[in-house]
Structures are given as structure tokens and as C-alpha cells.
Length: 159
Image (cartoon, rainbow, N blue to C red; front, side):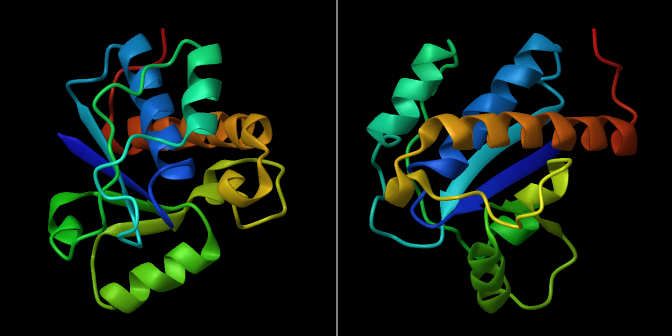
């Protein structure tokens, strides 16, 4: 069982969007039993809340469920529970390193999985309001991450 954790600042926009999109891709490829996906935030402000309205709206438009997703804060135990911890921007990566400097979990920037993009950061639509652009980036990145997970773990090929 492979476990992926997406991390952003408050866990109501980018990381729950990535969680929902990757879960949707896994379901389409019948890999939901092989890969577990979760999301968390650096901060505690939104614990227990559903995704932001903008995130819910863009996921609804694309017929992707976010049922059961609610904000939580990153915990020290996440390093022991997850195989991949994916930071949505460079500040999240720095914050994760400050929480736990030494770890053997694969901690990467989300944008490492988006080809052709120069930025290291997925812009935070909580501040920019541009949920459409973020949705496109996150969809592309989730496809890239899934490709890597399948290759590294010898999971079945795309249908």
C-alpha cells in the first residue's frame, strides 16, 4: 500500500484539491486499493472544515468528489505513515523541514510533477482567486505523480 500526503498552508484549497483529483485518477485506473491519499495543512486555522467554496466549485464542475475531505494539520506521525509527502509550494516545503528535519520519506515539491512550468509554487487561490488555473496545474501534477508512483512501484499501466 502506497500512501501520499499533500500539504499546503491551510488545507482548504490546494492540498484538498490535489487529494480529490488524485483519488479520482486512481479510481479511474482501478488503483484505489493500492494508493491511499490524504491532505493536511501547515496551520491549524481550518481544522475540521470542508474545502474552500472555490475548490468545491471547480471540483463540482469537473465531476470530482470531495466527500469526506476535511482540513487537518500536519502531524509528526505523518512522516512515519506516508511514503510521499508533497508540498504545494516552497514555503510549505520549508515549514515541513522545520517540523521534522531528518526523515526518510520522499518529500517533494508538487511542481516537480508539472512539466514545462518554471515556478516551484502552486499559487494559493485563497489569495489569488484563480481556482481554474490551480485546477489545471494540480491535475497535471497529479498525473505526473501517478505516473511516477506506478513506475516506481510496478503498478499496472494506464487503461
